[in-house]
Length: 112
Length: 115
Image 1 (cartoon, each protein chain N blue to C red):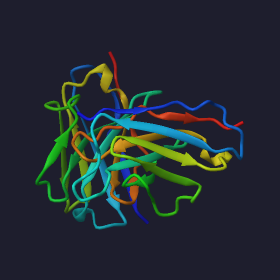
Image 2 (image 1 turned 90 degrees about the vertical axis):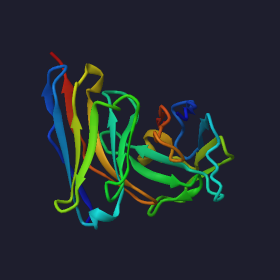
Image 3 (image 1 turned 135 degrees about the horizontal axis):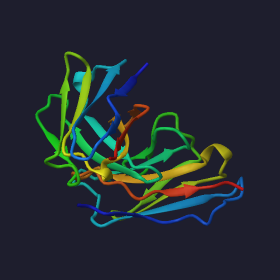
Image 4 (image 1 turned 90 degrees about the horizontal axis):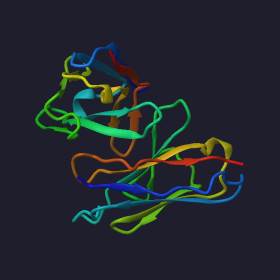
């Protein structure tokens, strides 16, 4: 199985500052079609998760442009520019290259 | 409006069985692959199963393979998760989800396995 490893944030992050969340996969998620099969989700407190980014760097519909995804085949970053109170929650990366579709362990964002 | 509504959870004893349902509305259910994803209390997300739109393929996490069965009835717009030989570590909120380049999740249904 592909193992997804997420980094921690130096919480709390001051409001208005940027935050970068890292995720590493045990296998390249770069498909032969040129797309990288990585999703980012945010789970706000008490809510179901929501998709933020797919194919490593494409924002899902309705997602603020303060969120951006980047990376290589195995190392990925979700950047949140100018964090706001509504960004509080746990962020997860997930690979969808292979089954099982493994998630990272989550990275909690707190705002100061 | 797309809606996914799970049901069937509850408190059960170890070794018992339970069947979850997820009723879909607001989209053409028969056109989409569907997932079950769970979250143990205070823990992260765990993907557990997927079924193709036409039931032609099913995939499972190792943790549930051989004990859980995903299925669907496209005539009823309903996704199922049959869970057998339940263990305490299966205690979790269970979500059904449709995830492509957009995502829709249910509100989740709680399953508690305890004696």
